[in-house]
Image 1 (cartoon, one colour):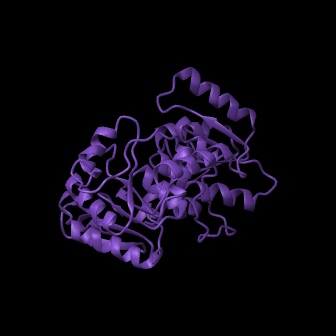
Image 2: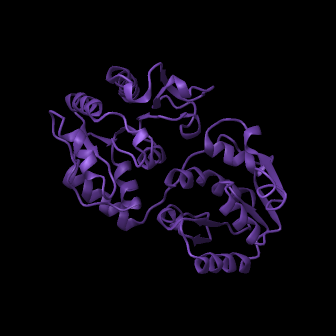
Image 3: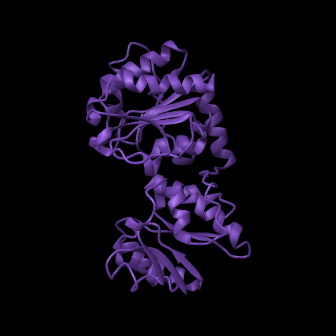
Length: 323
């Protein structure tokens, strides 16, 4: 997933800092490979489709074994990635322990996931390394893009969002994570009254679902535009002023861009929201409440019933923060 790859970037950066003479490679899905294409910390990327054929898998395994790795780290701990970690041939293999197949058999060092602190995933990834030289406060996310993608974003801003802009992600691939469209429409209208142009962020095949919000709005929104790639969308996000939306890939892009933001979570926000960031806040139902260093509000209502006014209170806090 896009978020998982972005949350891995602090670990990649610190590996290169701790082992400056080493080469750091990445194994990820093709759609997330762009995150590391221009990374100064990454030497090679191994791209493997989620539903790869046996031939594709063996091709990647051969490529990894040719690199003769000293260390392999599995951040997912699912059977497929555990086996790939073992198949890499790395001398030292680190991962999350779960049953024999995802413990001593695949890893030389493993930690039960439920014994690790329940915290922001970028920081938990760092703990998996188990190295005293790790800086646990260095959890900034990274997504460097090309000059061509920056130029696209500049032109996009000139053509579609010349003034103050709020990026809004009002849909999700998971229906359970979608806050009701009529309430998003109310938030968008209130932001329009404050001088923000709503930019509706969506992916291929999601335009109609997005229009369920814009059709309910009293004010105009930007919804008709050329579909950007992930790197181009990263550039566009950096040119926005605020993010409001559901949990998902755009939430992580906005966090990477450092945008002031309010995100709505149907699951616990702890793993997905950086702690101690007053300008990056959340709203979530109290049924998923856990000890949380992040900034936001737990509401004693089911996710779909979270009131508009509760979300707006968090938006106003962010607006006050950014002046």
